[in-house]
Amino acid sequence: MGIFSSSNDNHFLGIDIGNSSLKMVELLKKGKKISLSNYGFSENIEGADFTYSDDVAFLAKSIVKLKNDLGIKTTRANASLPSWSVFSSVINLYNFDKKKINEQIVEEAKKVIPLPLEEMVLDWKVIPNKKNNKNNVKVFLTGSPKKLIKKYIDVFKEAKITLANLETETFSLIRSLLGNDSSTVMIVEMGENSTDFSIVKESIPFLNRSINVSGRTISEGIGAKMGINLEQSEQFKFDLGISNENKKAEIPKFIVDAVSPIVNEIKYMVDLYYNGNNDSIEKIVLSGGGCLLYNFAEHLESVLNMKVIIGNPWFKVSHPLELEPVLYETGPKLSAAIGLALRGADKN
Image (cartoon, rainbow, N blue to C red; front, side, top):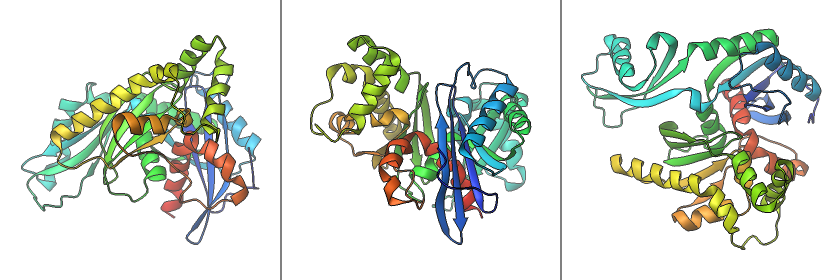
């Protein structure tokens, strides 16, 4: 849905590619103010298999169609790589030698990346050391498949859009949901095909996991229980999630059962983090289209005894007050696209 006219000057476009969905957010920067210029999404695209298919032309055509439907003129964009496709790890470099950092990182990468390094593009970021221990350095390492990166480059070339940056989806979420928050937080992203978990400290994802339980599988479980089809169960779930009524009511048992794998994974991640770290997780931030599930945040707070909030990816973005209700509903599913657009706006 386009809401304003668009031009290229000072506009920054983020494109989040799902398996059968596309999300776009365009931001406008004037001085230090960042404003919402345009946004929209297309879900359950017929014939789409963007994640696994090598059909570059179909994905490019789908991107162009949504972009044109929204009236977006910007021809430069940031896009994200799905979290599950990128290997990431915090590695320790002992006896650190700045002149040999490339060699040291490659050697450590061989230990944590289960694919041949010649098939990967490595990237890394040195984590600031508050103890000023120059001999032992922590590095955040990512490895992305060259084949996947080439696919994205070809897609955007076909779509005649300049691909400014590719980044792991987790970093897009950190930017839109956490900003400069340096505390330790868990992000739970309930996507269309999976739920991704990241424990983030000082804007670095120290621990990442993913399970094949998603908003869609929860909807399928609801549909099976209630005897309704997928489209009806999606609408039922959405209506319950945004309703202002019965906010104190307990979450229905069949929904509790459907989300139990997510609860168990959070518990596992928390225990895993606490076994190797001294600090505590301050809160859990929910994102993704499935997080508005009826009383889900309240349910998690109760069973986990932790603070749980639905993330607000618009907190850095100026927007008309009359759009607040619809932006609340759409924000969680647009978090990655917002973060991608913010990458461009923050650096200019």
